[in-house]
Image 1 (spheres, rainbow, N blue to C red):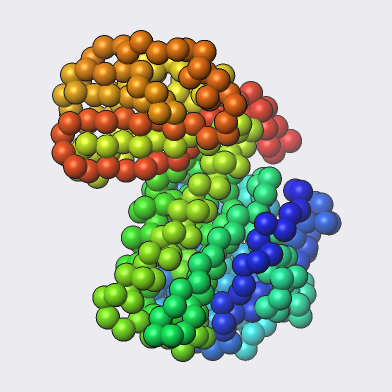
Image 2 (image 1 turned 30 degrees about the vertical axis):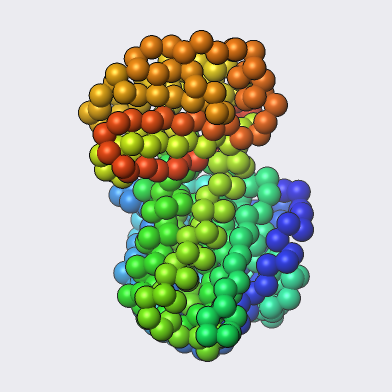
Amino acid sequence: MKRNTRFMNHSVPKGFRLAGVHCGVKSDPSREDLTLITTDSDAVAAGVYTQNVVHAASVKQNRAKTPFDRFRVVVVNSGNANACTGERGEQDAREMTRLAAKSVGATEDQALAMSTGIIGEYLPMDKLTAGITAAKAQLGTDSTAFDSAVRGITTTDKFVKVASRSIEMDGQSVQVTAMAKGAGMIGPNMATMLCVVMTDAALAPTTAQRILSTAVDESFNCMSVEGHMSTSDTVLLLASGGSGVQLAGPSADQQLQEALTAVCVELARMIPTDGEGASHLITIDVKGCATREDAHRIAKTVADSPLVKTGVAGADPNWGRIVSAAGYAGVQFDVSQLTLSINGTLVYENSMPVAFDDAVVSASIRDNHETRLELTLAEGDSSIRYWTSDLTIDYVRFNSEYTT
C-alpha cells in the first residue's frame, strides 16, 4: 500500500493513545497488521455492526458488550477476519481482548477486538500475542503513532481513510477524529467495513449509541461497492471525556451529532472512491419520495446494478439502465413524474427521453472522477444521498485472484 500523509494534520483526541505494528499476520513485513487504541481511564464505547448472520467472532463479542462506560482498549488485526472459525475463533477473540486488556492494566470486560481480512482461517495467536506486546511499547499520541495505527487496520485499501472535526463547546475545544478501512466487500446495513471514531467529549453510553447510529444511517449505510455485506464490519465510537466537556442540552448534543455525522460522511465517500479497481465515485441523489426508506431502496438498487456501474465505467450515459433499476426497487411511484439527470444534464422526463448531447454527457463522465445521478419522483418530500463505485475489469481481476 502506498503511504501518504493526507491524515497527518488530524490530531488524536485527549485521553487516547494508539500504535500500529507488523506482527506477521500480513506477509509483507513493511505493512502494519495490528493496531492498539487505548484510553487513559475508563471511557464510553458504542458500536454498530454488520447485520450478516454469518459474522466474525469479534462482532459477536463486541455486540454483547456495547454500549458501556468502562472501555479501556480495542485491539484490531488486519489480514485475517477470524470469521467462520467456530468455537476456536471465539476463544481466540476472547484471548485477544484478554491480552490487550492485560497490556494496559485493564480487565477483559473492558476490551474490544476487531478483525478483518481473509475469511475461514484461524488467527495466528502467537504472532498476535507478540504484536500486542510490541504495540503497547509504542503507544503514543504523535503523528508517528497515529500514522502506524491507521495503516494497521487496512487490507486492500489503496489509501488511508481519516477524517476529523474540531468544535467549540462552552469555550473549550472538542475533537472528533476517525479512521476507517474498506475498499471491497462493501454492502451496507451496517457496518460495511471497520471504523473507529474517537472523541474527547464526555458522553453517556445511551447518548453515544444514539448519535453513532444516527451518523451511520446518514453515511456508511448509504454506500456500497458491490453490495456484498461483510462478516466482520464494525463501527465503534469511543468517548474518553479527556476534554472535560460534558454535553449540556440539546444544542450541544446536536453540535456533536453534526460533527460526528460529517466525519462519517467524509469517510463513507472515501470507501467507494477506493473501491477495488474503481475509476469513478458515483453519487446518487434520490428525491421526492414518500419515505426515506423508499428513497434508500431506490438508491441502493441503482447503486448495486452491474449495468449502471459498467455504464459509468465506460462513460456511457445509458439512462435506460438507471431508470429501469429504479423501477424494480420494489417502490411504487408514478413513472410519468420521474426525471433523471446525469451530471446536471436532464436526460429523461415524464416517461420520455429528453434530447441531449451524448458526447458532452459522456465526456462529463469520462473526464471527472465523480459522476452524479439525480432521480426525482413526485411522491413526497423525502430524499437520500448514496455513494457507490463503478465496476471495472480491474475489480474482476483483483477479486478473482484475491486468495491466490
